View (cartoon, rainbow, N blue to C red):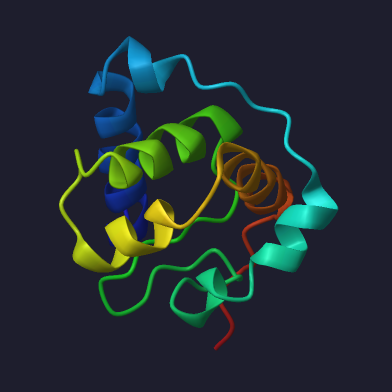
Length: 112
């Protein structure tokens, strides 16, 4: 299993364990709005779906898990100052839109 898959699995597991407040997050955001908002995200996170430099991939995540992780950062239940700041600026609608956009993107194969 690759490091990026391990990282993604760990994030999914953390989201599942976050409790009903986060686990019951609603999905169904506006993909086009999410694409518009994504510019800041892809400054660090690769749109290819590949993890690099310790920064996890966020492409192809199930929407509910993306939302749960972002809400956990927003509530400062997950420890990462950069992500807490980024998530703290986002509304529920914006988080749902980003989840819809990134969830709709396929993971691109590695290029040699």
